[in-house]
Image (cartoon, rainbow, N blue to C red; front, side, top):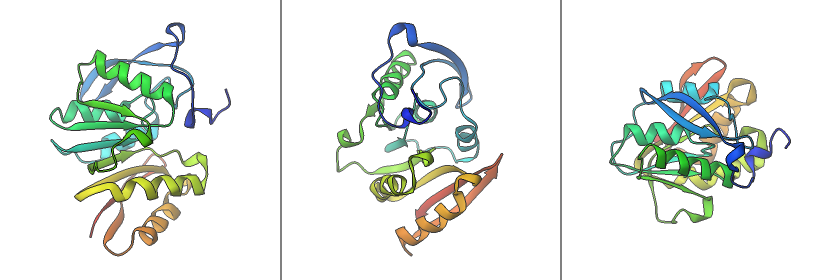
Length: 203
């Protein structure tokens, strides 16, 4: 499997492919299952760590979205922090979605729904979107992804995206501001370890 195949599709992992990690999410040490064929299968990657550490606590209720969920560190953190919310884990990779379902079930997080993009009902609006987006898929697919999901924020809802500075965080911030227009504010809220965290909110 080549380096970027984890952004697209892989079949659910077989039992022999599963590996167990112990990680800290939302202030708790939890045991999760991962597998090759997804993004950062051996640890919580640095960008996601920056996002989880610097973004504000998620809303306690409503629909929360982890866009490009991988094996689920952001999803699990959202679900642990907001047990009354409905947490959506969205990815195009069936293996990633299967891992999220396994991990949510093992942790008793029955308010998590892992879904392909087209399986999220069109009328769902998100009180927050959290994402370590797949920058390496290329500019046009990335822009299409963000055009699709960022406008689905609920009124007053926000989004927090973590992007590597050397992968174009500053130019993405400018593009988002132009694309979303004057009714939306796009600002850098954190910068750490070579990553920027961008917040998108209503003006």
